[in-house]
Image (cartoon, rainbow, N blue to C red; front, side, top):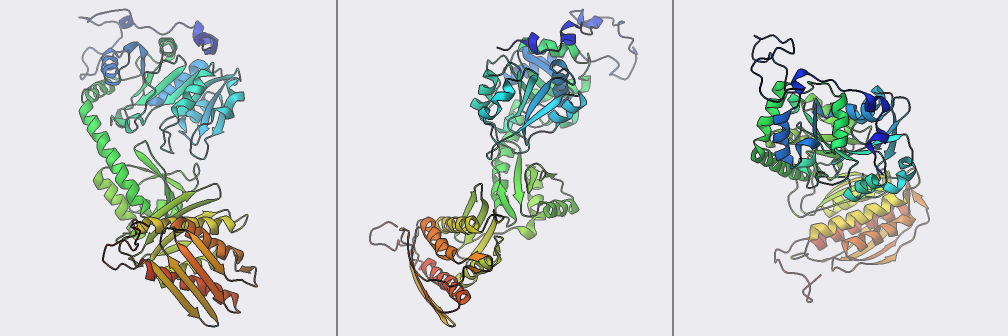
Length: 535
């Protein structure tokens, strides 16, 4: 059961807050001789409104909350610091955060000599409340900080997980909603006594330069924070700018709409860059992007006057890219132009991420240019290159697998992703030849027949004396084609004869490539190659 008196520092409970004469006066003073101000000055000679009454009214209308639920700070950073100072005894109490997340929670905790407990988000960057049951029972845990949408990952945190934590915790759950306007979900309006919400004027409202943050919570929490905050912590200029901005809600809404549309476009454009492994889903005004060589990309952008955020120490391989204006986003993509793959023709792609592998494959059935293959298994790369070259197709294959264990997952998952990309490129399969076959090589004869008829099947007749060719286990060759046929929805009949295993495997891949080239060739009829009317 949440009790504000039980989590507040005793000295804070006992203290009497600072009060000025203007706190004790209700109305408009004709003569102000209480604060030792310069009566002349330059238009800003009076202290700002300590009650922030007009700003509270404007924000109350903007967010639909009561004025008694509000507190403002010199950015959200000040409010984070106030929360820790109000409720955490230095050297004794603790806060809990979920990593990766906004770094200021840790900074403020360190400044106040308060221990930070860090718990990792899961692979989907979500919270599993069952993993912190012991933490919630710790009597010295006073605050839990949750950023939603989360920075730097961009995703919103599952609402039920947050509410479950609040329900089972006697301290305060602080939800940082800095990016809430770019999402479709807020905790504002939830009648949960130990839920405190942070918002900012720096993002959607567009006033990062004035440093203004807002806190939304129940009256008891607000009263405690008002006790310890400086009396004039938000200056007159900031208050005026905040009030003016809040009176233009339609402009703010329009800007958010433009940025969300740009976010969608930017995702599509970045996914077409060969060195991009993954663009993470985002509910914020930024994207977390995984690159093959993040430091190289980062330095390249810096050299062209474009600053992004290197988050590779928090999330491996990742840069955080803010969504800019259409012109700024174009400059970003132009700066990455030497890495951009401009697709034309029948394009298919597959992004596959598991605990064993992270794979991105783009297949272009009509444009063989700009192929790039990297799986970490050299001989396998060589075989995949045969598919691109002899099939006259563009293959962009980027794979990171658990090669520290073995090559099995890398080869199998690449085949599954490649088949899925082919299936995506073929779409409804109208106007294709559908069938293809055959190629001999040196002392080997490889026979490959393929039917993109929609039914996965593999007939295999080939064996190898060697267990490995380079780092490629020969047992995985048949497994590769079986996995491909499953996700590409094709029938494969493969037979190979010969003495040299290297030649035999290479002839199979070349024959497969030639068969694919023949089968996906367009006859320009637009007719589905099936009497059944469906493939």
